Image 1 (cartoon, rainbow, N blue to C red):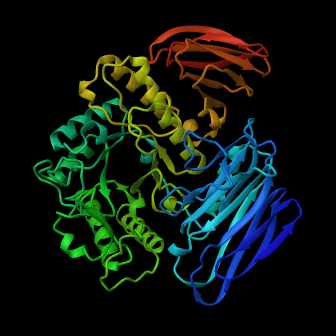
Image 2 (cartoon, rainbow, N blue to C red; image 1 turned 30 degrees about the vertical axis):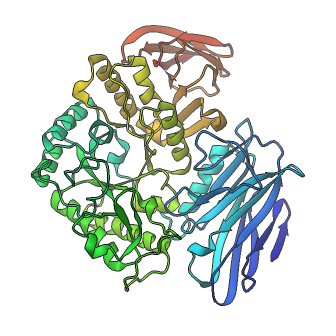
Image 3 (cartoon, helix red, strand yellow; image 1 turned 180 degrees about the vertical axis):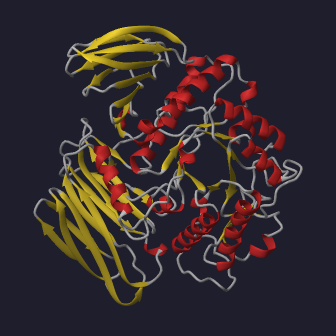
Length: 593
């Protein structure tokens, strides 16, 4: 056990259940109250690094909530006797943030090892009201080694919590092997997805019909999800793994993709990466090269430690890009690459990797490298929760995990993703709603995901004019303001209250979305200010604290129809603006008073 103390930095203790490992710790102060703790463990011979824990504590003072990549609706404290949360390359990310009710960082810590499984915890210790913090390595998942090195980043600065989280994402980008993939411009434009609208019941003519309608609506790509590869529409995976087009649905894949391209849209295609179905033709080829079999899915999980498994998958994707001309892939279920202790992995010889995480890293790195050699602007989508820093290396689109018809959950998930994803494109879960619900209610699906790239999944020909007008209006707003919405300084307030007020600012423009009955601060004068009413109230109340200025205000309803125009004077007094439910206020500064 090694203990190292540095002024203003918590005492860090490193311990391992294997006594053969000796530890060394070095703490470097990067700036005031920001520290890098370098940890090295060494053994005289190859050993299992079991039960390695890095531990420290901080006072539970002026801390009111905790954010981490899997916290979703609950930003509650952990307890020191709890289990914490797990992170690995294909699940979440090794970071947690403690902050106060003013959104100020009190402790944000992150770990450099984004590949292997680690458990992070910041649990309240009842005896003295401190947070006992730790990062614990899963020794069973690591192959035997003589040396292990990693860095713990401890940020105690009094800054915005979202800045502290964003700084971690930027730090990860500087580490070897964690450089993110470039983001094509098409990844930042709205897309149409087939999943909620069709599930597996696909047909090329119907897809082309929806693509044409989506293009006219404001979408630039179509994502064809599960179903193109099978005539089985039972939502299972028994026939997954051959990855040949079922011609009863799409008779000529190349011509079908060309038809979509002629409409002016990009084409992305779904693959469930690890699954090989028990009824697929390649089952016999790979049945002894599986990590496990999932009887509920009627499929096995491929073992990427075999080079021929990796090569089979990579060549499958290369063929789709080269022969069919697709523009991107939706790579699904990569978090399923894991062993089951109750179910031994396949026994076939020929593995060239000891570690499953290392093999997944090799597979996905090679996928991106080889596909970019064919199409440099290839788009790769991953779904939450495989959204960590290593996943940014393999893909350039992160989508919120499935929350059909749940606009609030979509808001939480997209904003959680935005906080940690740097410039990687963050997409909403697919927008869907009941075609008979009030238009203002349907508009909430769009308004709640404004700070991400919209994906739409409705049968557009079955929607009424009001719903179509609403979608057209908000998609146009997302396109026109995408520079500030997606690349501006994002400020999501109060995660513990599910982000009731969110703003993004860039240059002399600001967009503010209001999701609760609260007073909206206006703290900085801008030339253009957009206020989005994400509530069922028919007013917005502003509290300006700026030099007096005159604005021309245009108020629109959820369909984009102008309901009023007026001149407003913003200065130091509260001001109330009448705005329809799910409506928009566009303020253009005319002069200073």
